[in-house]
Length: 154
Image 1 (cartoon, rainbow, N blue to C red):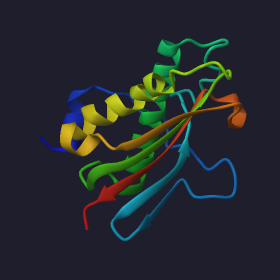
Image 2: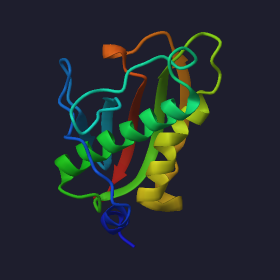
Image 3: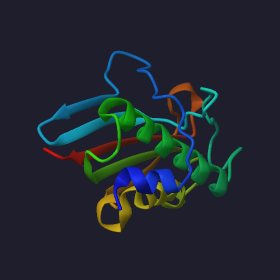
């Protein structure tokens, strides 16, 4: 099954492709790699899911924020390439979780993103090398920020 067919079967609603919030490009393609700048949990109404894990958000809310970040990432890919079939595989995920110092469940939060990528791109192409770390703050107070590298078809 193609990535686009798998995506359609999941009945997902994408937010608009997020614009740059500063002096950078949301996506740069070099050779057969697409580097995506950090994306946050952008909702369809253009609001961000904000909060701090271990304070005003629990792991499930963080998981949903990471999943929403995945939808924003997919929106950027579809906006840039027209569809998802040009994606060969997800190579690397770097997830940041805004959390209190005592919070240690960053991997469980970033699973919201990773499981979505697996569901859209399949077991072989959607599971990447990954880091999940905590941070004291993120831009605009968003709960999660995730940057990625995708291999694309030549």
